[in-house]
Amino acid sequence: MNTINNKREAFSIIEILVWIFIFSLWITSVYAIISSTLRINDFNKNYIIASNLANEQIELFRNIRDSNYNEIKKYNQINPSSNNYDNVFEFWKKYKIENNYSDSSTFPISVIDITSWFEEWKNKLDSSSMQSYILCLDSLNRYTYDCSDPGSKKTKFYKYISLEKVQYKDWWDIKDITEAYLLKSKVIWYIKWYHEFELKAVIADWKRL
Image 1 (cartoon, rainbow, N blue to C red):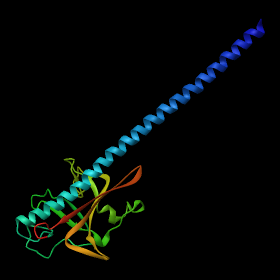
Image 2 (cartoon, rainbow, N blue to C red; image 1 turned 135 degrees about the vertical axis):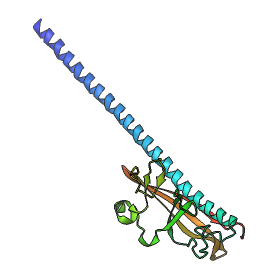
Image 3 (cartoon, one colour; image 1 turned 180 degrees about the vertical axis):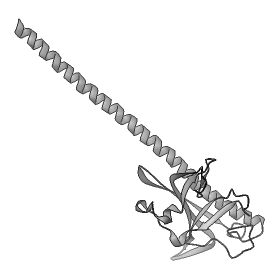
Image 4 (cartoon, rainbow, N blue to C red; image 1 turned 45 degrees about the horizontal axis):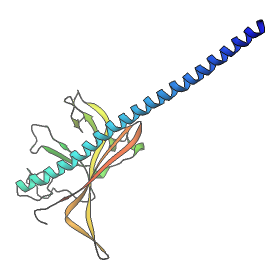
């Protein structure tokens, strides 16, 4: 009789261990699914922010061109309110471009050439060159390059535009369209991993083409 009872007790312990093992697998699977979902949600949120920032740069460039038309100036003059007609966007250069919220500004869009000290890549994130185009959130939750506001917070986003020539093939020759830019608007962010988002657009002097 004692032998039968011992067998029953042993069998019950095995059942409990199997149940614990199955339950552990289930918990692990649920945790992995939740963790993966949270990572995807985080990436999607940052991807949307990056795409909006990249699109904003292109719209700011278009705004400058259209403002130049209103002022009857060169379509590619950097500051339409200025009389410095030679200060124009140049091919193969990189720029910071953003809304200028300063009351003293002559034009509400700020443009700064960063070509001479430009760097990028995940091992350059802390370099002074990349820090020059990192974005902050100011006290009004606006993305800006100006991190001097006491209420501003540094983000993990970097953004800039680069300008290249628009080219087309004429039989065997590659020719340039001089009155247009191939605008590349790029946003970089490093949150858990290094990511890049780039939008391309052709901005042309359509009034004179």
